[in-house]
Amino acid sequence: MDEYIHPACIVFTFATANRGPLASLSKEQRDAQLAKAPLQRQSEYKRAAVEEGLGSPMGKEATKSFEKLLKWIQESTERGLWLAGPDFSLADIAATPYMVRLEMLRLSRMWDHKPGVAQWWERVKARPSYPTAITKWLRPEDIARYEKVADPWVDVSDNITEEVRKRA
Image 1 (spheres, rainbow, N blue to C red):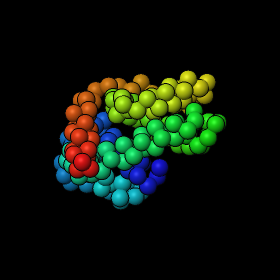
Image 2: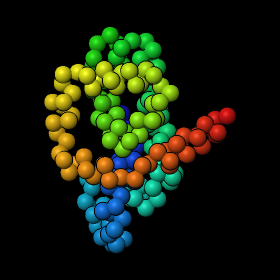
Image 3: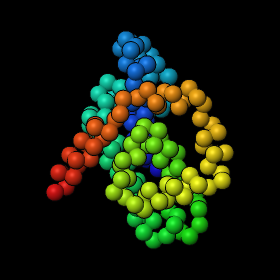
Image 4: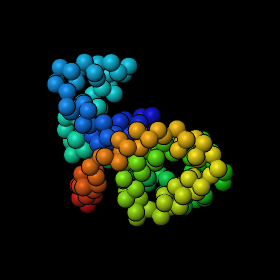
């Protein structure tokens, strides 16, 4: 997850929900803001996302990474209810925040043709611990920021279509 999904999540988030505030800064102000990040690599993900959006090479790579996650979830659910076996486990927990982010960005259409992903996600959200672990921590201003985002589906679906064409 840390190697490919977390960077993908940074790109998706900064190309959408966090793009406006950073894009409104001058280049110098944006550079100063991004320089505060503890990992410069993360600053580069953010910079590319803000400056180039989801259609950028980094946005396309992020889309591929999320597609890889969803494919893994789909394949895992074909073997059982949970990702790493018969019981809810750390694998399910690790994937959950990234699924939350996709849903907040209105990108659940990424799993429209992956019924195992949709069913697994509904099981995760039905767990009694879900509200305590996830929704309780979402502040109204966090939710509002995502509600204001322009729908990113057009760019993401273009990235998916382009990747499918490359593989064909």
